[in-house]
Length: 125
Ligand code: HEM
Image (cartoon, rainbow, N blue to C red; front, side, top):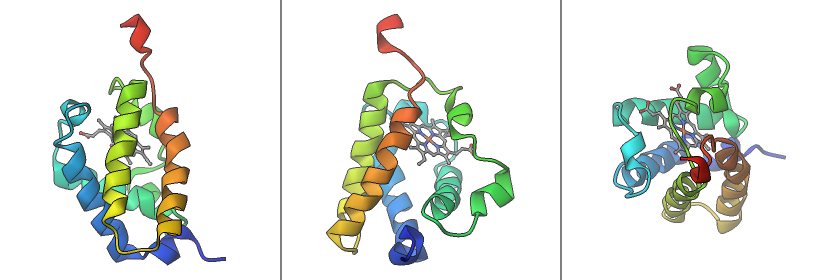
């Protein structure tokens, strides 16, 4: 059984990340959270998704254990923010030149990870 990384290929991961952050940086709900260089976050996400999808551990080799939830704690993320993040991802996937079943599989893998990043209870703000 091939990994998502093998089925998607490096070129498509680049395309996906590129398109995704172009959407994120202009998204009315979550763009305000992104304060650093777009090229840098694209590169970090390319490395992270490569390993998340079963490819080489590029992110960990460079930055250490991902500890994604901890790394997101400085950024207040609500349920609505996670939904907006996933919506950008879904739109970025739409344009990708790969089969629909693979797009669905990728999206489904990302949903729990995105919801796990929620670290702010909107009711308590
Ligand atoms: C749920 C909604 C999410 C929001 C609002 C969000 C937001 C952010 C923000 C604001 C940053 C810092 C960017 C900067 O340096 O300016 C970041 C970093 C990052 N995010 Fe997310 N994120 C979300 C979900 C995810 C998910 C699901 C993943 C992985 C599948 C992910 C992977 C990353 C990675 C790898 C970094 C770079 C961490 C580092 O500094 O090394 N994020 N995210």
